[in-house]
Length: 301
Image (cartoon, rainbow, N blue to C red):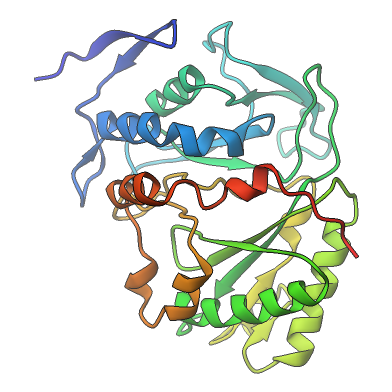
């Protein structure tokens, strides 16, 4: 039996890992030790997408069937070597004017977060500078959310329509699964404060052209058997689950970058359903399909 506490050294940092045998995904039997192992092994693909982005961690100390909470502020026991950045949080539900966000820039910080049962990692579409200060967004994202009985298969059809619209504006886009039932479409851009404006207009254009399949308005009553193109994720105050992040579901599913060929070929939801082990195999075989997001910079029209 694994000891309740073990000391490890990760890239020169001393960490205490606890309760590695604790099952966090009861229906799958996936333990905290396996969560830490997954994040350690996927780190080369994941960390570039977390770098310089303040992380909101969704923690599940008693597993996915227990109580969970979003954590923005660095907890009081945060090691001194973990990078934090103080950012304003106007309108905070708890009345805080600012919080110290954790920035997961390296493997020790990623392992530390995983040990706290931070299963889900969410980041904004903008970065912070090396000495603080907020940059304009360098990513634009569309969250394609199918309203039942629509599925991810329908989201794939809408993703292809949206790709065509973006292509016409000279913008390459890159898909990933949400790790649940939908798709996310990312567009790497030169820093701009117009991402929310452009994304809203694009979603509305798509609804005008494909109203039987697409909805761009928030009203949940309108979403049945349609795909909601959520452009609001580009609000600077919002975050989206990071590529390669685990999700809290029955199985340890992952928000997984996929190829356009896979999107085009998808006929059944299970074809775009990936768990941690499958994602590690994919990264080993294909590399990081989202690597262009860290280097490409396209101008919004």
